[in-house]
Length: 286
Ligand code: GUN
Image 1 (tube, rainbow, N blue to C red):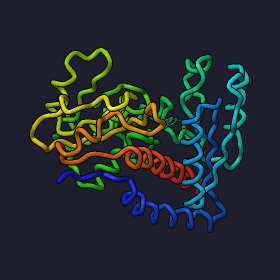
Image 2: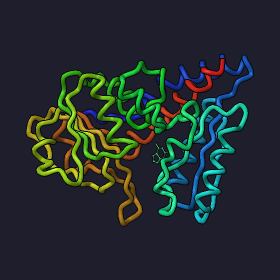
Image 3: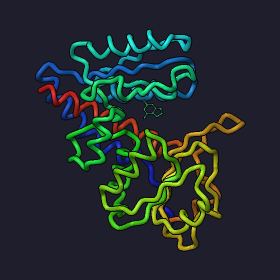
Image 4: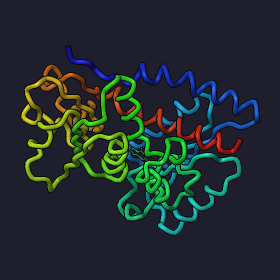
């Protein structure tokens, strides 16, 4: 039987811990506070940031979305982030990605102080991940952290396993490869220039897709064992306005041991990780 790896039970379990930690903070007059900078009017980014705010507020935190016109000049944008970083009592600052083309070259991680960098994109946090620092001693990027939490909840072994990651982005593929290596997986990262992706995916115990290509991963990429685990980071819109992942869920689901759904899989886990990182930041101020 294929196991569908839903985020909901993981969230239900972890939310209890988050709420009780926030209660302790509030007794000391600390409310975990996040600011999210949202540039332009990309509909998906608006939905994601709204979901982040909703979840942070649900657990008792505070979240402001700072909406900025897509026409903002680079200098003004940099000044805005600098002034937001100086806000007293703020615990986390996040710039929603992607940015409009004229700002997309900016190294956003390094615009944000490493202590406010709940996205884990600052060079210092990335460095600590490479060094395999203890969890809680740095901010781990939210999607990789969420995937790890999901795999651990469902008792999916990582140590000694072959993992194939499709996608080498700074926000998912690269940090995820490092994080799972820290947990003793043997990781191969595939990308647009990889020759013979199928060879790698067929060999893997665990396949993680983060390429933003609707239903890219079909039956021809998996082996016949029925033992593989598939994690889908993609959230793509189809021509009829529905959401689908990078994996052809319908075609593949009966041929694997476990698979994450889209929506309801990695997306909510990313938000959960963000809340965990925000609490970690707030607890530092105790
Ligand atoms: N856009 C899509 N996912 C993310 C994320 O985890 N962080 C930021 N900052 N932008 C995103």
